Amino acid sequence: MMKPLIFITNDDGYQSKGIRALISVARDVGDVVVMAPLCNASGLAHSLTGGRPIRVDNISEADGIRIYACDGTPVDCVKLGVENFCPRRPDLLLSGVNHGSNASINIVYSGTMGAVIEATLMGIPSVGFSLLNHSPEADFEPLKPYMCQIVDRVMDHGLPGGVALNVNFPEHAEGSLKGVKVCRQSMARWLDSYEKRVDPHGRPYYWLTGRFECDDNGEGTDQWALENGYVSVVPTSTDSTAYDSLGLIKSIFE
Image (cartoon, rainbow, N blue to C red; front, top):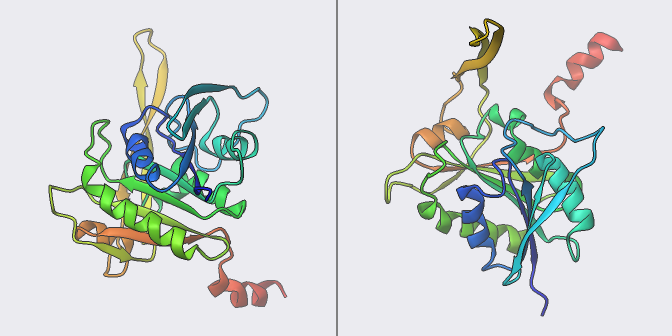
């Protein structure tokens, strides 16, 4: 019997500790093809590479796992990898594990979730995983039982068309995770600013800074779940229509 084919990508780069953790989970489920950015590609959202060629390095092929590094974006990795580097259509796409949150408004900027949304548009069941810890040496071991559970459930039951899962893990101490909560995305925003600095040659440059602000952290949101020690799972749709506002906008224009 043919094993399922799992496609894996991320936005932190093919050498990140988070993607290694995800590979270790997926290899117990089926054959694995990995195509991830050659370098860190965080914050690229759903961007594509145009105007230059994209190059791919074959990193390794062993034990049912093929690993490729692509000098494009996470979405490039999905489009190029599925079309040209998979022996057959993947049964599941996994992205991450991201070093840092992709909960709430962060999904808008996330290359991790950009890859997930692209695969969902291609009709592939897709899940993005993120840990609220930016450290390159973050501990992913306590997350693996939850990752296995989520992957198994998606493999068994599938996902509705046009729907992906955005999974976030809180920062944790050993044994501190309380379980899984299916949530809605909280409404929040980044208050960004560009700090003006001067380089050693006296030339000005600008550095992005900012703070995360969320007033929508009541029970039932991803922010509430994460702040209370739960793994948040948010069903995410590729349909961006604001259905609640259709009537109002029709009344204005029609």
